[in-house]
Image (cartoon, rainbow, N blue to C red; front, side):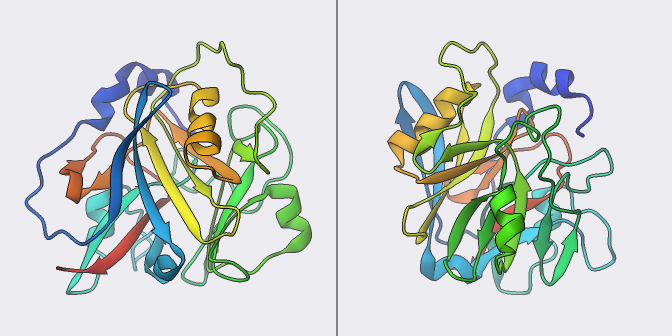
Length: 254
């Protein structure tokens, strides 16, 4: 899976430094919030905005984009990136560990077996947009059975919240802390929350943000320690290690 995990852990916030941006800014509902004493940034996307969500991996020539600047380089004239974050785990060549579907292309295959690392901490899941609901987080084995229609799909793990309950393997007293990011979905599928922690947090703390703070019915972990956010309205453009999948909202320059 990812390389240099321990080095990334030690870098911590250094991999998520904030730059002042001199870029066109589009409306994006990104805000800082505190939950149980921990700080987060949460970007909220509503059902009407689902068509504006993008999921990126390669450019038109098949080269990995790897960062937010790469994503911005693919946008049409008059379009801007309202916010973005990394959107799933990846191998050393930046290919997704599990399923990735965007723009009619599919990379990787759905993984339903358990394994080492966070991705293999079952249940894991798939964030899916479009189809029967604007936003869904679907447990991977249920996804394999249902084969739902998705305009965008990215698999990661573990799930943070499963039908209103925290993942059963999360420990209240865990000492494993990372800067973490993920996505949660409302019970009606009409709202998606993309969140990243300000400082290293445990899985239990991060899961409670979605379950208790945002009232998400289901939520999915994207990654930790390499987690980064692009949010120009907050004058934030995290830099650091290259990324695989990236998700974000595209809007017209305003």
